[in-house]
Picture 1 (cartoon, helix red, strand yellow):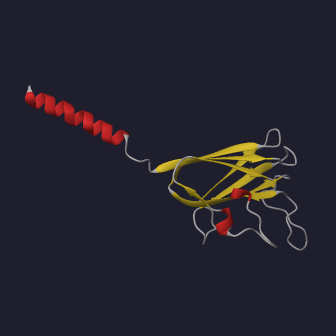
Picture 2 (cartoon, helix red, strand yellow):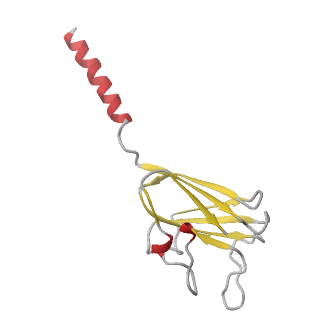
Picture 3 (cartoon, rainbow, N blue to C red):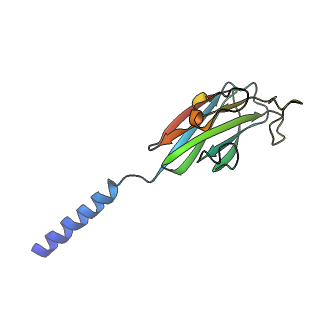
Length: 140
């Protein structure tokens, strides 16, 4: 009986320790608001480093709009530093349209609602730390 009690206690401790271990991945929920219209799609890029920011994205997706907004969810994202860029591809051609000098014709935004001066914002202004589930709002 003593051995059976020890086995049960070890089993309970084993199950309890797995339940309280820290999570390795988290969810990022991004709500995009104030799009000009419901035409086209929102294109969103998630970056995981300063060296890749606005270049090679870690993950990306597209979303339809409803009532000039949308919500995008990324699951199973590891702890770390991230930044997000989005644009409203209103004519649904898969690229950000610009004028003849390179100024965007379509609305765009960044995490932390970061703004750039004569160009896109810097990584340090758009980045956020992910160490728990995160809810972000980006206004176009």
